[in-house]
Amino acid sequence: MDRRLIWLAIGAFATSTVAFVFAGLLPLISESVGVSLARAGLLMTVFSLSYAIGTPILSTLTGSVDRRTVIAGALSVFIIANLGAALAGSYAALLAAQIVMGAFTGLFASTAQSTAIALSAPEHRARAVSTVLTGTTLAVAFGAPLGALIGNLVGWRFTFLFIGVVAIFCLAILWLRLPRDIEGVRLSLGERILVITRPGVFHALSVTFLYLAGGFTLIAYLAPLAIEGAGLSKNAVPALLLVFGVGAVFGNTISGRLADRLGPSRVVLLSLSGGLVLSLVIAFLVAFAPDHIAGPVLLALMFPWGIVGWAFPPAQASRLVALAPELAHLTMPLNVSAMYFGIASGSLIGAQVMAFLSVSWLAFIASALLVVTIAVLVLDRRPVPGLAPG
Image (cartoon, rainbow, N blue to C red):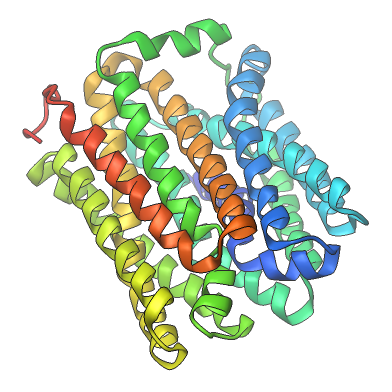
């Protein structure tokens, strides 16, 4: 394996950890900065919105620049934004850091994948992209719980410093090892978005958006859910994230194989259905079970929750590729944007639930959104070409 792919994956680990570590840091940030949990949750909202909107814009603006320079620039700004977050003296400053961080996290992610393709022979390109995406999966499994643990032990600011240090090492290695002549794809923003008009693409992106909105209504507020709703201590949050992350690695691994056997649409439906069942169980658990039962059961549920949650992305990506194989280089970035629009919407919905209702309502609202997602999926009977029926 080309070792440069490993460093791209480590870069993906660092940048993706920022996206998923918020779930474990919200109470710490809320207390430190002096804002409510709902306002602290908006940090994830603006990060995700910046990612979703900023990525296609920055990708368009940097399309004619060599990939080595774009990766170095994206990581440099990402590092500066992490330092800004660590040193932020106010909520507004922290919010500004998240906006910058979100956009350049997205630019790095999209550029790293295209660079991995350019570094690989045609028959190894799928494996190369998978290697880079492993960094994102490991960020969920280990980066987020490690970041939450660092936050609990020495403060949330050190979490951002740790992520920045990892990114500095990646920047140095990639600047030295990547060739200077990898060209980007020169496309206008309109050309990047026009693929939505292809039959089935907008519908598939809608499923992505709705699923992530439902999931992150709950996941974004996992820490207050565990502490206020299930009676766990803040020290248990890293363990919850770790168990969820291990399940995510397992779900991500088996999803592709199941999609080959059953068809990607069936795997997506199984993922959505499993997520709905678990969300409902969590809803009733938090609302009605005593803390000595709710806490341990919530911890046990994190593993299957991680499995069903992370079985979705690979199968959904397969659906999109099958709808327009020749436009995969355009549909995949749009799918990522749909994911982060969903994360932004879910964290915003969760913030409103926290502000006007209570933590026990989070899972009920998430369940309702998952019901809508399943309805949207099953109402589309369009066959997915080239794959097993589903």
